[in-house]
Length: 83
Image (cartoon, rainbow, N blue to C red; front, side, top):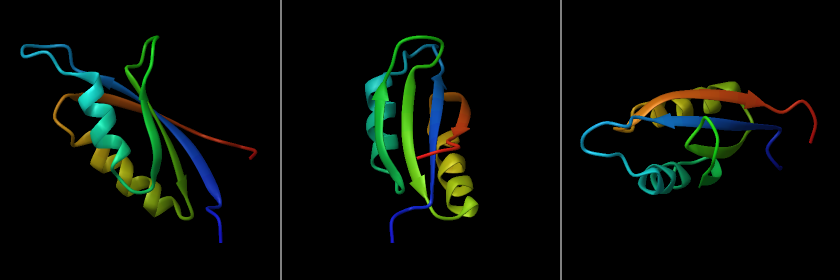
């Protein structure tokens, strides 16, 4: 059965010394389940991840894991209301 819910996770990375590479963050995030894709983006966020999930606990767990990646400063999650 296909996932019931979808979300986008906008990620801000730290800009310190040493410089954090947004491509590396996107690669790490894209390898996490249930992340479908993660890309470096322009604007106030650095990386955007697309997540498909069937329980809120699954979303909670992946968000916790994203926030624990060294260099991730903050996240903002947007859940979809329609498919």
